[in-house]
Image 1 (tube, rainbow, N blue to C red):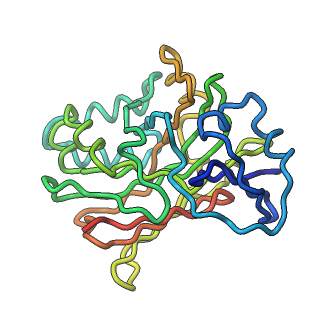
Image 2: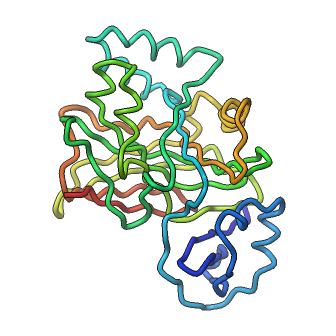
Image 3: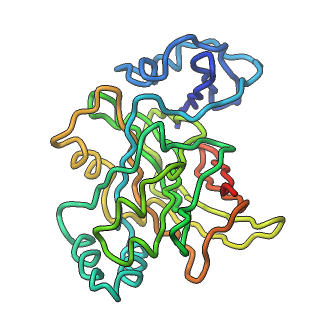
Length: 275
């Protein structure tokens, strides 16, 4: 597989090829760059050498961020368990087997946090977890044009109390982790692609889990088609594709915890929980 990593930097764009070489900074807006009809060819046409990498920024400008839920069996089971007391468990059981997937709004640039940034946990929640998710980039032509790493920060107790509270459990300041780059490939990611997450508290690893994207019940094209069926995205959109890596209760994030989410060849998204 041939691939390139597109980084958003202060002056514009910088691209890395699969050999670790970098382009000179490209003075073009993020929106214009990633919405080109032939993005892979644009990356191929750059000149690469041993340039210095400029400080990277969150790879988002005018894009919205959406997310799909209950796309893995483990996610269905976890969501049913957390909402059983409220009677909401049947919703998650049904949506897992339904034709129509669960898709919800997650945020925009205002809510997004990039690599080495600080995500937040809600102060009115006692059970907060990160959710590592392969994230699709869908361009304005409704094509899957790249991949990123997503961190769908979630307040599980709020969501479990009532399914109608999902927007409050999912959407708040610094709740949408995304980055570190946009991966552009000449073929889809392989089914055996691994998503892994480690959480560190101090110097100690307090959680570790991994899965393969082959464990998803729904295809990327299916999720993309539902999201774009009745909505246009003039500058493209990001779609988190769900997770099955869910820390079991009573685990909950604490201030200063460090979250490492790795999906190769995209890289590793590292974020810290804000104090």
